[in-house]
Amino acid sequence: MSLDELKNTIKKHLYIVFKENFSNDSKTFLERYVAKHPLLKPELIVINDQIHGFKKASKKIASLEDFPIFLEIEGLLNGEESCYIDGIDLYAEAHINCQKRLSDIIYLSKMYSQHVSLERILDISNVGNESLVITSKIQDQLMELTIESEEDNFIEMDIFNKILTNHLTMFCHIIQVLNDLIVKDLSLVKIENNTGYFPEGH
Image 1: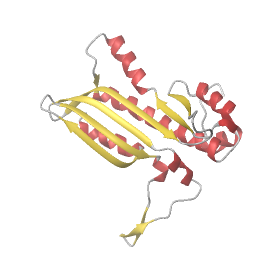
Image 2 (image 1 turned 90 degrees about the horizontal axis):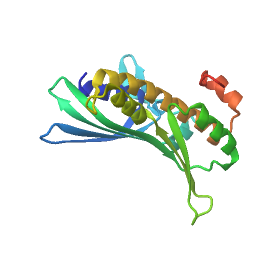
Image 3 (image 1 turned 90 degrees about the vertical axis):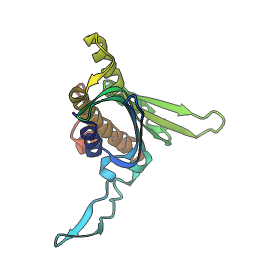
């Protein structure tokens, strides 16, 4: 699988608002993205096969703007048709108050522990100023694969793409769940009914 195919996978699962890339003569590369939840991606207004602008975003999903997503991928190009992945960092940071639903957040952190870790950051000098960091565990899974293979610390692109697809899907799902919980203040039962999915064990 090529780097372009990898980029297509990312675009399919995230609404990209900024990206930059770096490469050098040794064929190593670095891809950086700033993105939003895919539900925030503007929909085109098409009338008689002509584009007439974008549909106005629903107020129901506007609060997802509070969860900007950051993605960074490092790897090595292997010719024009393929590349190897060396590392990946996927996280979101929301500047929101978590205290009211803290027990539910802790519960969700255990429920989704295979895919993400949740970290609450408090500013001691400014009471009330806090943030929630959602970090994907995709890098942990990649490290486990390289240890099991006992080979180079690179992951074949086809394998990586399957792992990336799974983690991006779950990552966006978790952001939506946390948005419903913290911002919209919905019950866990209501959230499960809305999303149609909670991990096994709920």
